[in-house]
Length: 225
Image 1 (cartoon, rainbow, N blue to C red):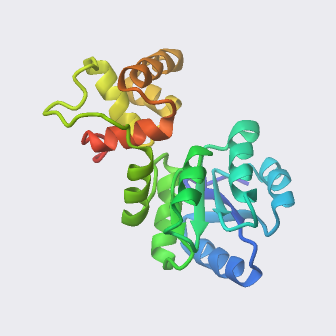
Image 2: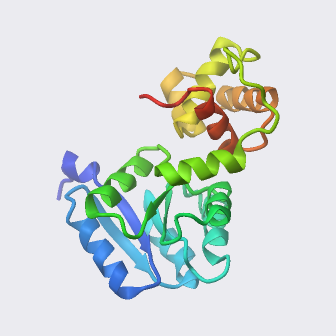
């Protein structure tokens, strides 16, 4: 049996949602989109890691409203131990700044409201699956306020300390690209990209990729392409 090009382009998604009825509705919306295959689902935190290791999804649609800090810890573990790059959070608490900040720093690439329509949900899954970050206007404002670099003056050129190549790197980081995708885009070795990223972080005074994304966006980068 051969695999068609359309099958190869379909996104493999694992769905984590603690409420069975909501989980069934989300699965129906994703499966009915024509470009997504829900390859696994779970309703309890303990089942998530084995499910992901077995199904090898490209995107994990994660319930951020799991009890306690279970969801954030799961996201951190999936990124660190399972190499998951595409985690899209779902929450009914879109104004919970602490939750959104923790999820972002744990490796979540964005969030979508559980009350979102099917079109918005599907679009967000595809965005994350293609290496971009996703956040609504409210979340973007919250994250910017939480992670902006304190004391950075507004300048006509907000990144005068960066070389041309470092500006290119920061622009792609601000788009949500990981090092591998940056390397492909700029035709560089991944090790070279890592060195550039480290230099950029040191020059702009940030400690993590999430802060670099916000810094870059505030500097007008990563907004197109």
